[in-house]
Length: 140
Image (cartoon, rainbow, N blue to C red):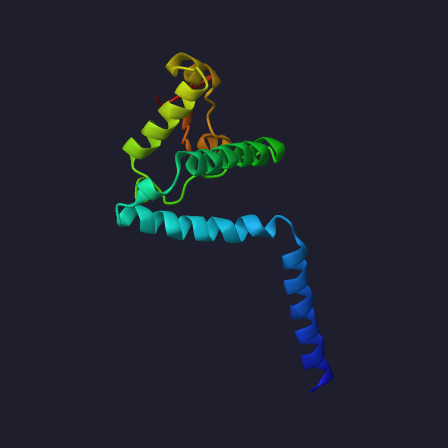
């Protein structure tokens, strides 16, 4: 074997070992497994085979991890798969959000007070400014 092939194989082995030694790499693998098996359970009408406690642990972990990443990295990212409602329907989203709020003793008023606009939304808004008597005005 040539020395470059040996070096490449050695590099790949090292990267694999680094991934195995990374305590958080398991979350990446578990997320893939969880996603696939959850879809299967739902499609086969067998969600009842998964305990309430297991679902609560997964949801709690997801909420805490999302908040830690978005607050800690000062950014937001789409918390669900899909562009709109291809993966999660509005009913599914609202059912989950409502129950999370209820579990914490919160209601729509608190949600309204705490909700924030995603920074990305400010860049998607098209503000056409025009001069009107020396003052910039919006077209809206």
